[in-house]
Amino acid sequence: MRLDINKIKRIMLNKGIRQKDVADKGNIDISVLCRILKGTSEKSNFKTIKRIADGLEVSPEEIVKEGEL
Image (cartoon, rainbow, N blue to C red):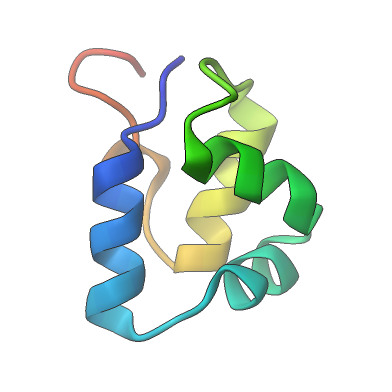
């Protein structure tokens, strides 16, 4: 499954939350989140997607590319 990095960044900007906030709320390692947001990590498993979604307080469907979930 591919995350839509632009959607994630847009949500973060709109909600005024930082990467550290997402990592803390989603219980995901900040280095993993940084790699994903830099685009150096192409695919993610559902557990990682769920954690990022939890950190953003959105559903997983909102942060994956169309037709990926």
